[in-house]
Picture 1 (tube, rainbow, N blue to C red):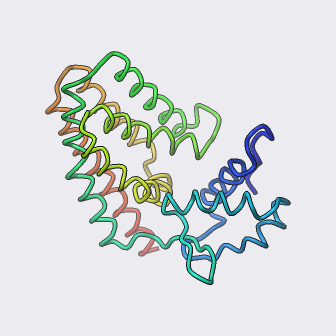
Picture 2 (cartoon, rainbow, N blue to C red; picture 1 turned 120 degrees about the vertical axis):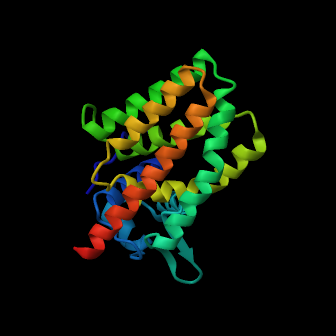
Length: 226
């Protein structure tokens, strides 16, 4: 079972961390029911913080709430769903990156660099292992670029995908046979942004998403054949 975080955290936040850790430990397979009563007894907490944590997980797309049945772990993306999600990202994110590349600031570039370094440490094991840190670093990289685009409509469109992207990260990217590639690809985007090459940054973002799509499909086929 995952170790509970500091007691100084709100209990609902602690439960979110614990459950997220259990997802990454493979304790909750896709489609499995989540019994709040059983979780309450197992984790020795009341049901209220668990419900709050599960509601947050529902927002990410990792769990689903069914009327009269409670919560259930979301199923894996079908191959068609995965392709369509990545195609949607290919429409949005290169454009967001191009617009961000036209508006770079030293502060923005440093924030992006910090997110990449955190992602690299998590992927290579150079820092303390943390599922949440990996997810946050990956998510932060993409959100920083979306915000820097200065186009609230495009940013809103990307944010509407964020729960599905988070589900993709957790069930696909972190389980990838090549978990270090995203940090290298983020670095390539950052290098183009730093050079003031907005078009190059957009191209590298497009390649990053294409690569993530290819990795996910490859790993999916490996699981199916195995």
